[in-house]
Amino acid sequence: MRTRRDFLTTASLAATGLALAPLAACSRNGAPPPAAGAGDAAPAATAPAQAPASGSLITRAIPATGEQVPVIGAGTSGSYEVPLGSADYNTLEETIRVFFEGGGTVFDTSPNYTNADEVLGALLESGGWRDRCFLATKIAEDSREAMEAQWAETLRRLRTDHVELLQVHNLREWEIALPYARELKEQGATKYIGLTHYLERGHADLERIMRAEKPDFIQINYSVNAPQAAQSLLPAAQELGVAVLINRAFDDGKLFAEAQGKTLPGWAAELGITSWAQMFLKFAISHPAVTAVIPATGKPDRQTDNLQAGHGELLSRAQQDELVALFG
Image: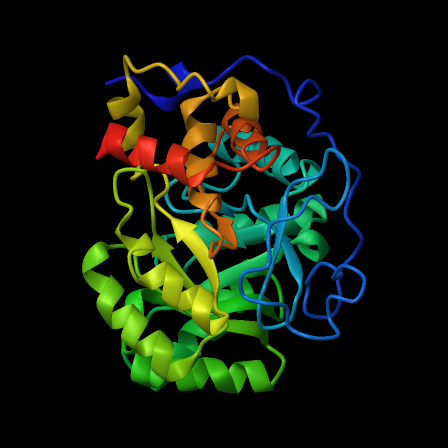
């Protein structure tokens, strides 16, 4: 099976215009400063994507506050589960530098990803990236006592005293976890709270709970070969003003095998799309309900490629439908 590397272009960071000026330092909650006037009132849930400056990543507003975040984020599952000080860890130092210097801010992790929290925390501290990072993590335990212990350990491993987003992982014991997350929000330990799932079978429950509880965020799977979220869940989030993070945009890498032997559509070049990775990510962020997509990678060249998807025009509905037909 061919890997994603077979589909990457040889364009460098400088050639794609991703070497951007550092973002301004964040507030106490670590959030990037909102655009002028963005904090005055929550915008409409259907607020269009916008590029704040030439060469910058497209951003979208978090409906609860109007805070703008770049549409291309990063995850840690698999890619950041490496030994501290190893060769893979050293490569991650370059990967995370490419991410932040390329304009990224949103990082999603979980205490369930073995030592990923510890690795990410070390990288953020050593690189001085924490103030630029919109840091999202999760609660994943079965009792209030265990959740409290996990949260304390999460902060220790991430080397911080707060996160920007705290999510209930895969709806696990959400009746206990969500009230606890709200308490932490009231204490200033997190700015936003959310709910996650990663499979279509969780969509109906997630929508039901989202409508009842109205979290700030949900996180779900959505890709060209698994577009079911667009049927009801994404429109519901848009209706309610709930921000959306997208996981599994590459279907855990399976889409690169499916793309083998396929050429990019003729219209790809018109949108500046030069790889299937960019196409898959561009598909996800082209839905107006989506706030950001969070692909995980441990390779600098793949990180560069991912970021490129956050530039240029988005896909039309017809182009999205064409991709679904191609990979469905």
